[in-house]
Length: 127
Length: 362
Image (cartoon, rainbow over all chains, first blue to last red; front, side):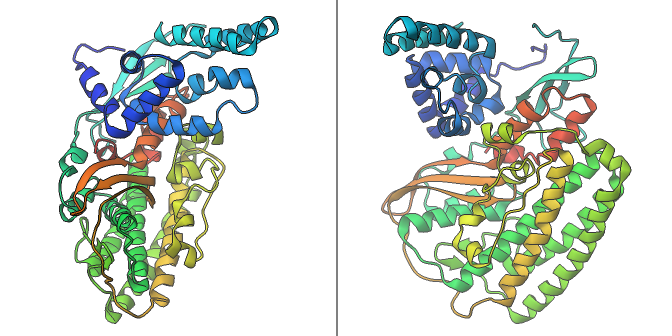
């Protein structure tokens, strides 16, 4: 949503993300997704509002504790983590990636299938 | 399916129902709110940056200026974090007096939050009654600490002032009066049919949503999240036999009622502290040392965390403050307001989560 009288919030959003704890969180998410910190920051600034950026550290912590218990493919891809806790990918896209990766695990080694699935998640985050 | 947006409605930054400036942008389809975005940055203080490099004696005063409504707990958590770094013990009498100050602050904060809610749903009579009762609570905070808002009551190893026997008796008498008045206010709130119409089933947040957004304090407890009150882990509160209040409705009504119930609980805790107040000194000894810690305490709105790094001279080298409103405002915007049936419920739902923009924009 854009209003004519709105300010550009990118600088303030960047300030939130570069504070001590938020910076650690962004680096941890970027490492998990296998992408650069700068690219992830750009995506976060574009997609998330200021309140969600402020809370990203707590959401990441809760995601580490509660997301994707049980299913190894979902845990590797971060199905719950990146749709519900840190909403970087929409649920339909993630469901498609999950289904395709699960199918691939029948045809090729688990690690290779998961690596391809993660690549798709990365593309979805950057799209 | 792609959502169709009829109108984007900005609420704020200046709004009659907001205590502090914030803008909530609501995407609506008819009366239904599809999603909401929160825009901050109207009162950023940069207080963490101001704190860096300063000695703890200065940071102590800055810490309680993060928020004017729950300043005592900012003071308490910062000081307890410094004590944790420096292995400073607190005399039992001082530990009990800290609980008294903290609970008085909690009562004042909860009453103010419920005042705001009643004001927002246009029940101004009850709102004004609550504000009147809050004055008595602040008077007692002044009786104990010498100040009503920024008290600077706690210092490493103790507290600054003792509670005199005459003051203790006067405080107990005042608390009995506050308790009676609050019972009447709760009865008005619980039995009001129009209040129920604006509150019950409105702004619902499930337990799972509350956990996902790391919601804390009364907002989480109203959605049935157990074991989320940090007072359960605090040694003085454990000695006083503290138990957490939880409700399961998850709506505006539950959030306000949890705060009402906690007011009575806090009054009981203060009473217990005063009646069993141990004899002895109110200040121990000790020096603030170099170290690093992350320490959390239960503020009126929920979990308040201070991550501090100090040097040999007790200067704060680095500090990060995570206030409860960071979590609660986000949960409110993205879990409670999302898919709300009416745009008219946005203001009351937002206020029911007791948002503190000053805390959020520390």
